[in-house]
Amino acid sequence: KDIALSREEERLREAQMPLEVGENSFSTSSQATHGNLFHFREYPMYPGEYVPAEHNTLSSLRDELRLDLTAQSLKEAWMRVSGGVYFKSVEAYYASVDGLDAEQISEVLAALFPDLSHYEAQALVQRTLECISKPLNTAARQLSRTITADAVGLDNAPGHYTNFLEWMGRMTETRAFKTEHALFEFSRRKFNRDDVRVMFENYKLMSKATLAADSADSYSHFYTVLKDFARKVAGEDTRHQIGVRIDEAEIDPDTGIAVGRGCADGDKYWFTALMRENRDHNGTVVVMGKPLHLALDNKAWLMEMVLMPFDEANLDYRDFDVHIVSEGHASPSIANDIAAFALRMSVANALVKLLPLTRIPLKKAGLLSVDRRRERGQFPGYVDGKKVKRKFTKR
Image (cartoon, rainbow, N blue to C red):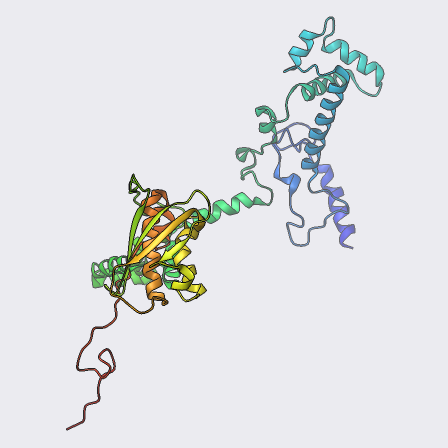
């Protein structure tokens, strides 16, 4: 019943469809309409819309593809026939052939194919010569394949994907979206101490009246506080990001050694790494005269920590000789993660001195920053001298 109704509707509409050239006439070629979006509508677009059987919704694209394939095969046939005589334009072809012009060739063609009219034969000749002469990626052909946004009123995208992107882009410019995004990134702990300080200052600057006015729409007060943080975590805009400083290489000219220092837990662990390039690809990491695996008791996770700067800088640790000496307090074993942190920091600093550009990934990964935490000092009021308080009696 639906199909019958749909056919009836099509039959009634056919009479009203203007076929002559006019203001709102339907043109059958995608060239004339600059690629009307109607040609590749995604069916069904409207609820209850009837899609005819074997209806090709990509008809114009199919025709263009067929056109390009035909042009390609024509070119190949012409190259086989002519033995590689190539010409840039139709005029160049007529200039190269004596005694032939477009009318004569089209008359020959009209005689060969009686079904073609004179003008159709002439157009066919012109089109064929254009296909042979012009490369497929000329500006004119690219332009003809482009669907102009002015003509269609939309962007050049089937399924309006570009419109969706533009709409999303406009939406992400709004204050509400920036606020939501900042809250989301805040909940993922993307802030640092400085961000929190700025947020607190923004909050302190708000008067009670401002706070009441901003809270009226339930998000503007968030925006006022998180304004700078929102600019920091916005994806595309990188103007807020502080560039990484890159220093000159500090290498000893005689030995080719670069020196880096690392510390952890106050002055308990203090290491100095001496690093130089190894051209033979058999470099080693030696910690206080022992190989790395012996110094760290074969603890793989600690060895990975020490070698992490090479991974971050996308380098191979075997291209470097690393010799690490301790300058802190003597300790029986350095096979713990706090000492490994100091070792890692010394290796990263030495690598930065040797190859200054590696400072960018190492600084971004946080391998050059000092961990200021330290163990608590001895204090006689505690049972263990550190953190367990002794019990006091009531009296």
